[in-house]
Amino acid sequence: MYRQSLPPTTESPAAAALWAREIALHERPELADNAEKAMRELVSQAVRRTGADQLMHAEIMITPRGMSLTVKDPGRPDHTGGPEWAEMSTLTSTLLTRSGPDGHEACVELHPSLAETA
Image 1: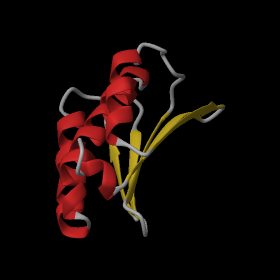
Image 2: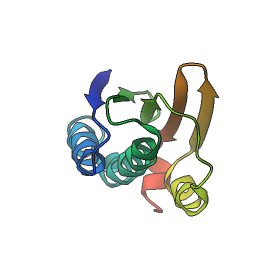
Image 3: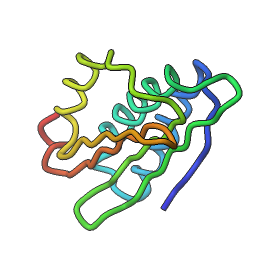
Image 4: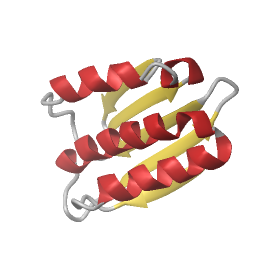
């Protein structure tokens, strides 16, 4: 598992996207483009929910079927991600979000069969 913590800055989505792409190129090259796009969007949405003095946490797991990307932030969902979630659904086989007392979590699974058509 790969993990990193990010501040809620405008640079974080691009930095996380590059990080995800580099991991994918090493572990699952066929998923590199989708990993980059998905991580950028997950972190972009988390930035909006995270206070200036808080951190977001990104995780990447390599699975037998592909990759799992998770971003956790301390906020509540803002329900403004309609178009973004629609695009995300074209890249992923699974898209899960949940909120609780510790904040918000979004997780996507990427599989090679979707990478070929995206």
